[in-house]
Amino acid sequence: MVLGMADRLTLKDATEFSRLDDFIAQEEARGIGPADVCKLEEALSRIITEPRSEGQTSRSASFCDLSGTRTR
Image (cartoon, rainbow, N blue to C red):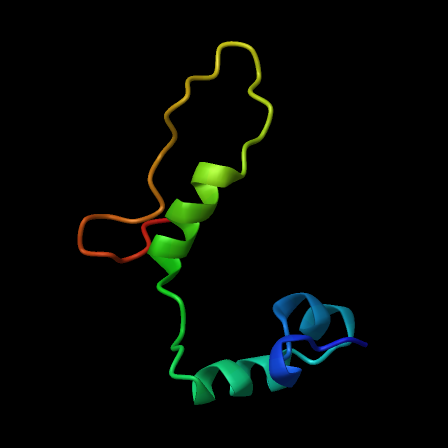
């Protein structure tokens, strides 16, 4: 396993070698907190697309309301 950048564990390596707990501890030590689920889902929805079935529109229901809480 190659850790790269001054022995920092990458997410890719952490998932590949079952070391997610080590990765989480490393990132928390760097000051990275938990992800905001609504913001993460919104960002992922911009880059991950599924093939649309015929007649499906480009808009879909929101996972989050304006308060930032998950709605479905």
